[in-house]
Image (cartoon, rainbow, N blue to C red; front, side, top):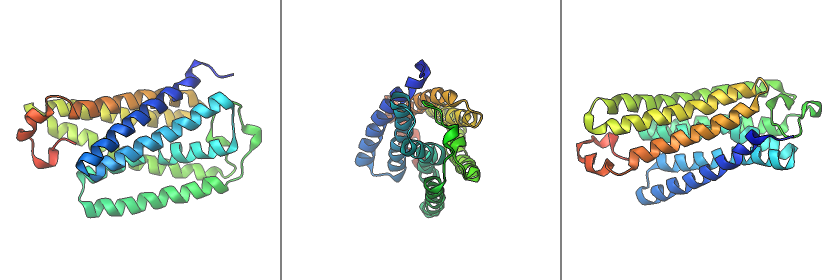
Length: 238
């Protein structure tokens, strides 16, 4: 039977959808590609937690499971990381990395859809990749997640170091520390799911999203515009 922790994805979904609205509005105002990717990232984040919520409320279903694996294990933080790629790297390089990422995700998604399932391993209200008969498909997600970790967390850490050097941008250093921590947490939870502890993922997804939202709020909140004149063009507010 579901416990209280199984209902956490419902709140995560609501938060992610609300955050997506904020990001798309800012993209409409500024037209910068990293904001579009971050908005897409929040939608895929919400899609992953919606499947978790549905499993808690209605039980395990094959279609929901496959959608969960694609949106969670394969996509995960990848679109958010791609936003950071567009923010930090030349556009030509970002475009090439986009092609590589999309190709990897689409390949993995097709394999997840085609893989037979071992129904004897299904649990009524829990999701786990162990039901995939093609176990080797599960080896694709760590590479995509490593990409996400490198750019989402690594990019935030790099930005935090840069911003910490100047007093007028230290608030943005703190913002990037929060984003880095928020990016790490779901990855930790994902590791636990490989050992059958999917509930850890539910908690880390929620806490991670809270930290990412906090970091974004700190980076664009009151006081940012007053210090914008002292910030280099590459460090301009998002």
